[in-house]
Amino acid sequence: MQKFEEDEKEALTDKRLEEDRIESVESVKKKKKKNKKKKDKRKKHEENEEEEKAVQDSKKKSSVNSEMFIIGTYNLIKMLGSGSFGEIHLAYDTSTRQLRAVKFELAAQKNPQLKHEYNILEQLGKSETGIMPEGVPKVFGYDRVENKCNYMIMDFLGPSLADLFQFRNKLFSLKTVCLVGIQMLQRIEFIHEKGFIHRDIKPENFVVGLNDKSSTVYLIDFGLSKRYKDKNSGQHIPYRENRHLIGTARYASLNAHLGIEQSRRDDIESIGYVLIYFLVGRLPWQSKNDKAKSPAKIMEKKLITPPEILCKKNSKMLYNV
Image (tube, rainbow, N blue to C red):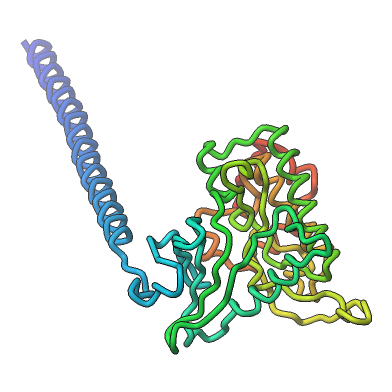
């Protein structure tokens, strides 16, 4: 009788343990389900925020009033893009029936660059033969709309290499990289021969032409460019230190990070980084938000990354940011 009671008690204990185990499993399942719902809700909320932001961005109005820009034979059509430099608009020239790009900057801007860029492009476009150099955008004029904004009229060109790279899911073949790289080096060689350095080499500043020029790579955005040698004497600018970083940190040369006066070698080093980016798909110091990452951190990563790691595809170290 005692043994029966003990067996019954043990059976009840086992039953309770099994019930507790089932209850525990059910509790975990409910918890997971609840967490999944929260996660899905949070994800949906984030997606809605992104959609809302995209709608707001699409509705964002230009800071340049379209009524301002019916000047001479040019009619403003739409804004193509904007940034810290100002805005770029598409315009139609009613006299030549050609599309042009118009770059604007507000007259009150702290560090105006448009006149400087126009002067450089004018000098680059000068040729003894009268033939426009290949891969250099042609400018058609510079002026100011009252005291509101400055504008420069130039060639309307195609998408940037950055856009094409994104369109190709960040995958360029070795052949494409070589063909693009040859043209990039030819452009920078021409700029250097004219006595200028670019100082902001990046995928966004190389664009392709349109129609019969669709296979031609153009170098654009000379707002940060400067002469590296005197126009008359041909003397090279002096070596200097403690300079501020000029250009885009992701593609800037080590000397630019270290505060050394930039020269031709820095443009070429930056082109090297761009070509590796096209071939590999990512640079070791790259992050989702480069703007939030300090140039000092990027420089530190550049200093400790050997060439064999920099150029190696799918390396573990490549994604360690």
